[in-house]
Length: 312
Image 1 (tube, helix red, strand yellow):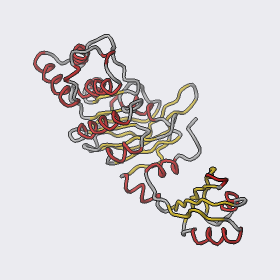
Image 2 (cartoon, one colour):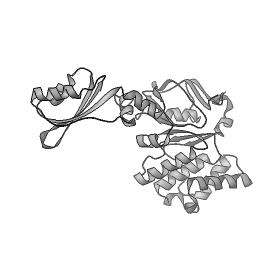
Image 3 (cartoon, one colour):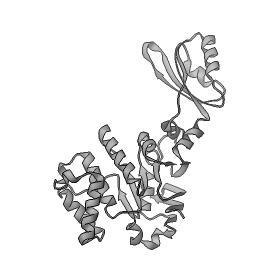
Image 4 (cartoon, one colour):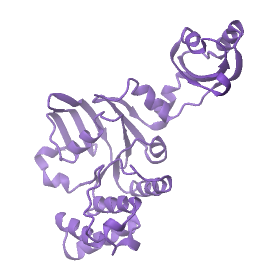
């Protein structure tokens, strides 16, 4: 039995559908990346899983039991770090964690041990007696993660945990999430594709309220490899327009290159179009500076699945 199951879950706000009948499962021990453009329904889905919001339709189950029925029992098994990381800046780190422990109904030695474990796992011992408002953004995120794991949840839900961090802080938080994922099931929302490839065993892509893809990272990249991505840089007239006329071309993205040249990325299905592009360049009198096939990555897959802009 899967740890988490969503079946035909929907949510609307003022007549606008944010999540539209999504269905998926998350098994124990998985670290799942939850991806999508802004407004696609990621945060709404996470808030329904954590019971901050109730779905308008469908059902969410934890270990086979509907969370709507289990209520507080389900909440005790879920840790949540929302996107805005709502800390109390005037509290000391230790005071804040003691406050969270009380909210989680942890007392005495159990509370003290849980705080010690969370502090050790998130590496915040050096700031334990400092006010939260004096901490860097990276340490604030660590404190947010500490409160999310304080009660040793089975499922950890993280909404944009590295948002606003510098590159070094991102690496540290990513390493921390990888460690946390060894003992827990993690659902991670992020816009940073590198974090997903380094951290997650599986990805879910949501677009305009629907699940657009679900599977291991390598599998989805391999599936997308059915489309070729060709880079070209040339000088001449009508480069972009002529490339778009080739059979099998899905889209052509053009941009200006030095010395008046045109750089283009051609996405096509089926065969390798490089020989045809070479012949076209000769026929049109273009001067070719570059012609190569580009390696597909997760960012390409994401763009392919969510083409058409942000969700409404």
